[in-house]
Amino acid sequence: MSKKGQDKIKNIFMSMRCIKGEISLDHHKFPVYQIKDSLAKVVGSKIIITSNFLNIHSAEEQIAILYHETYHLKFFTKVKRFFNSLRFFSFQRARWEEEFEADKYSAKMFDKFATLSFLKKAKSEYLISVKYNPKTHPPIDERIKRIEQLKF
Figure 1: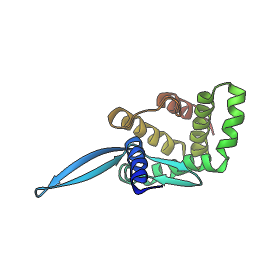
Figure 2 (figure 1 turned 90 degrees about the vertical axis):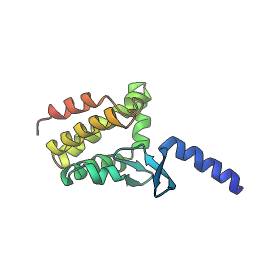
Figure 3 (figure 1 turned 180 degrees about the vertical axis):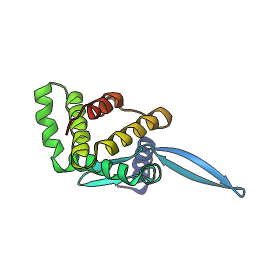
């Protein structure tokens, strides 16, 4: 692929994943990109974290988030999504159920209150800067409610 083609693909990817901006310092302008993802996510076989993950979450919340993401890795979610989609007749519902299960796994394997804390912070992030995607994640209030109702 030509350099021009590679740059075009890079620009498309950056526009989907980042908010492009500019900072001016000492009469110099610097292009900057703010990643739209607020916490962490699974990409392939890796957990990717963002600077927000490190900057706004306590150590306990970070561990809870990593357990949540580990669930997605550990339980081979692509195959599970396929079977869930057959069971629920809705890919969206299957994705939502997976998120509920990942939250539950985090609460059970680490700490219910740390899981609730990161979900409540995620709610404020959705309200401030991060676009909530209902195709992949259930309403945050429902996720919080389900964790609050857990009995261990």
